[in-house]
Image 1 (cartoon, one colour):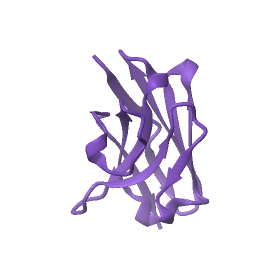
Image 2 (cartoon, helix red, strand yellow):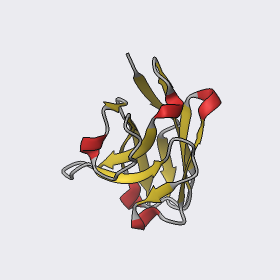
Image 3 (cartoon, helix red, strand yellow):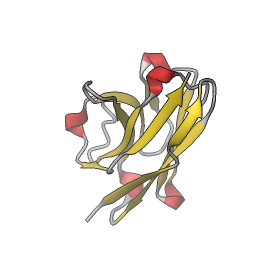
Image 4 (tube, helix red, strand yellow):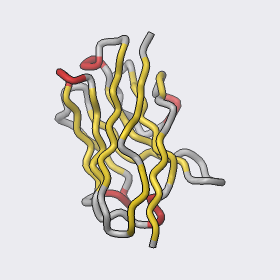
Length: 124
């Protein structure tokens, strides 16, 4: 059974940086497209970034382009989200997700397995 676990969240001030990690166990990581989503209180879960199986193709939410970078290390079964120049509006619970078909599409319904989530709080 495939499991995802996020780490690296926390609280920072505006302009700060955090790096989220998501480690996958129980499956063949290199076969999955991976993505990060986030959900703020009272709002719908939204796509943040995705990365293809081999890591060559990435896609980002417009509001995080130039500030966030998604990457992966297939030999470590881990996907990362480097978040720089953080803003208070980035405050949310962040989730990593695995897409077994490798589509890397922005819609949550395409992702079969999700991590439990990790909190990111950006204060002004």
